[in-house]
Amino acid sequence: MSDTAATVRPDRRAELANGLARVRGRIADACAAAGRDAAEVTMIAVTKTYPAGDVVALAGLGVVDMGENRDQEAAPKAAEVAAAGVTPRWHFIGQLQRNKCRSVVRYADVVQSVDSVRLAGALAAAAAGRDRPLDVLVQVSIDADPARGGALPDAADRDRGLGAVAAAVAGAETLRLGGLMAVAPLGWEPERAFARLAEVASRFRAEHPAATALSAGMSGDLETAIGYGATHVRVGSALLGMRPTLR
Picture (tube, rainbow, N blue to C red):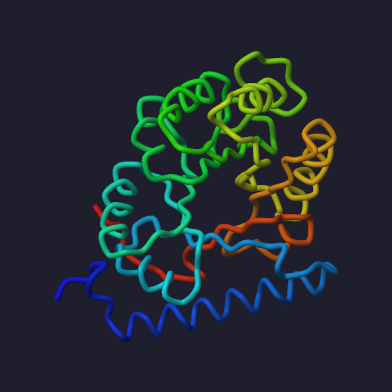
């Protein structure tokens, strides 16, 4: 039997249940240490490179939010999961090319990686046929390195400046500005990265008070991210285990 949405092996389901219990425990402990309610933090299961069967199994264990970062993998996986009668909340969290927007808006409920005015415009146009606005998080660059992904805080750049990108999303009828997403830069300690992000998020919320989501933290640094106010953590290997990359 192949490991597909229709055939979830009992041993794999047990592995996922154990991983989920461990991650939920870590989130609860981190929230307790930060004086926060664990209900404030949403875990996104990052299912890239894992099969549709894992998504179906996780949904059966009560996981609602799933994350993918490559459209060529996510689109068929979402269709396979839907065919199994499962409807998770899909988050697109990877770098998004403008020519992929029309595909992504067909299955994604949230796009977390908008980092330019041009991308916001393409996504807004692609979302025109939806029955409700697409939730968007602006990906922010913690180290403000223009060579990497992320809108640039404190920059006047008309395409990549954080203020310009947020305004483009907020002004689009087909999009809804939900907040910010960030990845700790390579070489930065999580404490330094998420402290900087918290400063950016505080100023951002002053301008956009309804955009309270802060997606930050992954398997290795979710506790630090929660300590600095993350509302969403993106967990892959700690939940699903290590797996060879699908090709």
